[in-house]
Image 1 (cartoon, rainbow, N blue to C red):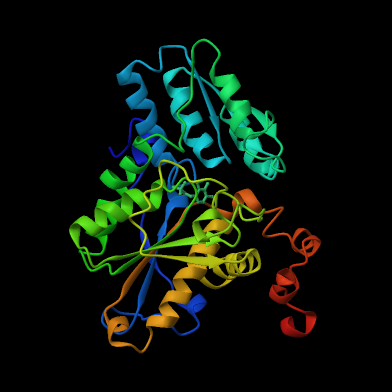
Image 2 (cartoon, rainbow, N blue to C red):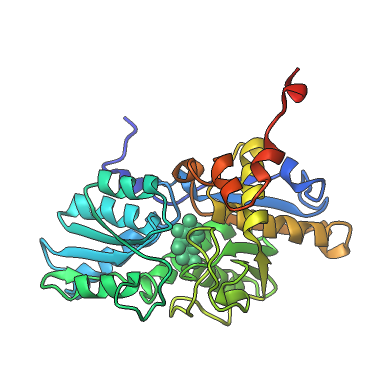
Length: 340
Ligand code: PMP
């Protein structure tokens, strides 16, 4: 019989899918014929995102160190995905979970956390990090209660470590060591730092490229609000290794959202806005490399962190986009004339 003992056994080993139509001719269909662009589809993890990977590792390390005791409470500021991973593992192991989310996080995402048995506290986005109501400070207060433990994905070395020990080796193995460029959005920086460091150790020539929402610190901003969720920061987290990325590509909300919509229609990849942002940066890179000697054998891997299911009322809703002045929905929409 073929089965696993727990859903958690299915975390990782996500596939690479070649992108084609959404690359507007810049991508190759075979290695050696131009930039081959491969998407690492992380929404196929059981909790629906790349963050399943770090949750197990952070909890097991805290149990081993004694920071998390039987019956304890896990408290974390999270935009949703880390919460799902933590909530799944916590339920199985008998811990309570309280998550603090910024108010821009979709209601769908918050409801998912509640469905897994977690408690959700909503904090305002429009206050500076040092404000008592900021989502970092609210979670600090909750985490100081007896029995509480804060994984702190922004400083926990097990966040980048899980990518260094698992996601990086997967990508290296799946591309048979032929990867030349790795592209990922940067939130805590755990993904890019862990994978980037592993890939550079295998081959120092592999280029590591961060994709960042315009206005975030990683691309030289000060944290001006942007709408893409899960990426960009207004501070430099400990989990981001500044020595790893060779380059940061800045992507606007408009381009991120338009490309997220294209991925669903043209590649059948229903992904979140941060995936659209990273894939847009990968497409830009492929366009730069196309037709150059370097481009011929380029193998670009772009990591798509989560599913579009959590954003159906936002990125995939024309009215929501229009409210922020994005004409993407209109442009993507078929007219009666197109259909007939
Ligand atoms: N996309 C989404 C939707 C996320 O939730 C996150 C995590 N904050 C990221 C991208 C970025 O990943 P990392 O924190 O590893 O940089």
